[in-house]
Image 1 (cartoon, one colour):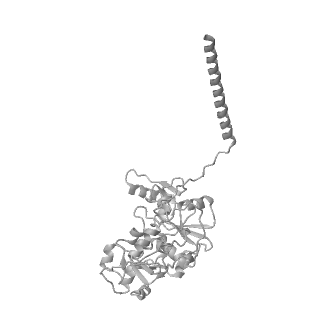
Image 2: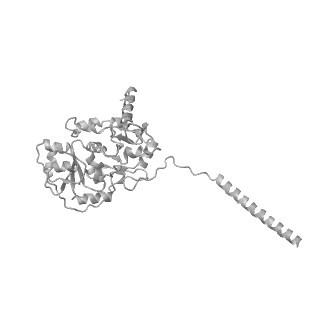
Image 3: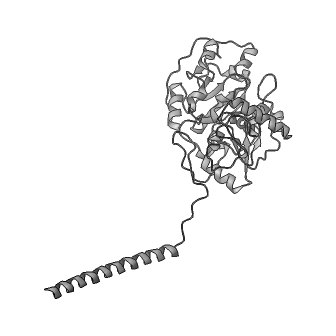
Length: 364
């Protein structure tokens, strides 16, 4: 019996050693395979896709685009607007706040219940809302695809242009009244206080070319490559461009950008847009053979530059829709004149001190 027990025990030991040998061989084999296979390299910049609640979420390389593909975006004057009152092919839109509209507006002008930029742009980050939502809102206010629209706000107010969102989704025309409501009043034209009730129609969203809007992922690739085919135009204030002010986590600018703040497009006193000759002088150094990408903090201030450049014959002008409000928050993305905002203490004093340091450094 004892001999059988020893034999049985020995057999178990042999089996255990055999199993361990197989396991070790397997581990060694797997290890060898791993070492022979090149490790996958991680991308330099891994950006998650933007929220689907905005129009610019593509992670594909930026494609071709021409302003000839979208509806008209003209700069118009008071006489032109007056000639369109009562014309069924035109819709005049008052983009100001509700209280301002109720105090007086251009005859026949419809209102969106709030400042139009608060309706056609997301209230949180200011990005243009998706095509289906915008189309529904436009239709509810009597605007169909084939209508031509004149938008106006307060004089010098770029917000009402809404990054040309309506022509992006298929509107035939989105014109801007230079000088705004004040220009209308100054010309002695009639105003109304009775609200206009629009007749709802159908607006079918038809995105003309998604490349009109540049996503953060696309711009990150362009900046990283240093592609000379692109001209980056920052439409924020001089202070913001130079890294001053409260802009988010970081102040500064996107590398390679040139600054053209909104006021360079306007007459000093009337705040109406400059004449074509004067605008040509302002933008004389912006090459027409390049892709011009506009951005500001939330996109609004790109409106005047867009109108100006298109009126001057530029064919490839686009909007970085996320703008600096998103760019500055992505810490992986580069920022020139980068300064992190100190949230401790009095923020206004922090900004004031930064301005003093800037001047002491001899910068403008």
